[in-house]
Length: 383
Picture 1 (tube, helix red, strand yellow):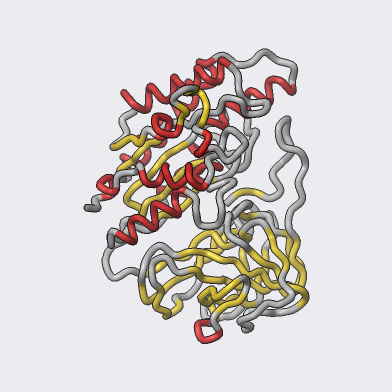
Picture 2 (picture 1 turned 45 degrees about the vertical axis):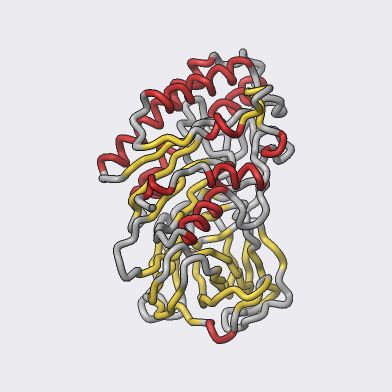
């Protein structure tokens, strides 16, 4: 989750926050674990005013914005229908007694009778989200007047009570972890979850990727959200049941810093100036995770030659320096060398054509699948 709207800077222009007034948001989420009880975690940590949500429900997704009528359940907070999200805080719902299976898609409906501006959300959810016309739709399976919205407001997590202790995988990263430019449910974290489910190895995969996110933001925050070394505590280490961390990032520290320097008519930063803060921040994240008894896996940074405005010789040298450190001396508990199999053998500074979504930076659906299929399940204690 991140602050909305993100403040404008040299890379990102001004944005507008989503407003809700006598409307229902229906937010769709895939659960990674089976269980018989669940709780919703709502988040207003970036808000500066209270948010009153007058009714909340949950149900199984059928098609589009429609839920299975028989599965609709009211969600209570301290025994009340109304949830009041204090500024800067999270709120956990009462338990909902409902059996769910790993891989199921659920729809959470949030009705705001008054007016509220969404200041805490996750943009680019990669799965369709919806907002109704006027009125409370939390008791309705169908939402025929729904429009699409691009992100998830206030809902940060669904916690499932499992019969055995959870061993969750949290993927900390940027747009490549978030699945930018992928089709729905085809990002590498989605395919990894599918592989774990087929292997009958219960490991929920939680996607903590944010488009435009940086690892260190040492030269300034030019993308979205707090840098990974700042948000790792809340977004990863404090997640109930986390056992494994998968860290992939650095390309935005390189590319966005380059864009910023050009916008300010400054020289392109050197390779060391771009790479060293990323390495230091990843070391910090590894140490923090190890201190919590977690296993940490790292991925090498993908090629990005030919990208608009971001590629430079200094940036490529920085990427190679980061990757050499990841492969040889980072101290990860395991490394997946995405760069090695995603690059074009004839042009190793570029993505393979079949793995290129078209922007020379983000993988295609085939590229995301290749990333997931190259991650050994044995890293997570699976056969």
